[in-house]
Length: 394
Image (cartoon, rainbow, N blue to C red):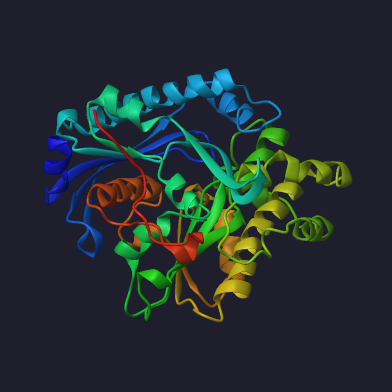
C-alpha cells in the first residue's frame, strides 16, 4: 500500500497502456509519460508497438466469445494466458525503444472482451447486465511486479451504465476546444463517436457506439478472400454499390436507430448478423459485398450524427482514429457523407491514430490511482460518476 500511496502522489509517471480490441489481431502497447491528472493531464508518447497474438489465438478467443461454442476451461486458461502475452508485449516495446522496464510506474489494461451484455434482463429474480474482459490484471501485476489497473467496465455497469464507451473522458481531457465543435470517431471492430461541444463541459460530453466499424468488413474478407482485412480498402473500392443489399442492411439494423446511451459488440455485428443476407444475396460479387458493407459502415456513422447529434452540436471538424482510419475507401465514404465537415486523421492534432486507445487506458489508470471518477454518466447511462477499474498490487 505504501508503494501505491507514493505512486498516487507522483506528479510525473511512466505508464503503459494496453488495448486488445474486437479485431483480435494482437495487443496495442503504449508507453506514456503522464504529468498531473484530470484537466491538468499532459501526455508524451514515448513508444508504441502493435504486438501480434500467437497463431490460433484469435480463433480460440472468437470461439469463446459465442455461447454456443464457448468452453469454461478455455476461458479460464485464456484469462491467465493473456497477461503473459501482455507482459511479452511490454518487454518487446521496452527492448525496441531501449527503455528500462523497471522504470515503469503503472500499467493500465483494458483486457480482452469476450462478452458484453449491457442491457439488463431478469435472472433468478434479479435484473442483471454484465460485461466480461479476460486477461486478469492481478496476474499481470504479479508477473510484471508493477501496480496494474484493469477491468474498467464493470464499475459503470454495476451502476446501470453500458460500461462503454470509456474513451470520451480521455477525449475531453486532451481534445476539447473552446473554438470549434469537435467529433472524435474511433473505428475499431465497432465504431464509436465522442462529441465535444465548444461551449459545454465534461458532464455534457455525448458519446456512444454508432454501429459497425471494421468487424463486418473483416468477416467478409475472411469468408471471401481468406485475408484478415481489406488493406487500404482496395477491394471495396474495386466493387460497386448494390442498392438492394444496402437497403437490406439498413432495414435489418435496429441498433443504428436506437437512441443513446448505447453500446454494442460482436454479439450483434458478428457472423449471425450477416448469415441470412449471404443466402439472400448469394449472386452479389464479392467485391460488391465489400463495397456495399463499407459504405454501410460510413452510413451508420452519418445516420447517428443526423439523428442524435446535429440538432445539439453541429460539428466543425471530425477526427478519425483506429484501424478504420487506414481504410482509404471507408475514409472517402465518410467524407462523402460529411461533405461540409472537415475530416482528418487524429494524428493531425498530435495523437497517433494507432496508439490512441492504448494511450487512453494509460490515462484512465492514472485517473484511477489519482482518485478521479472517469466515466461520464451521460454517455454510459450510469446513475452517477464513479472511479473505474481494479487496482492490483504486485
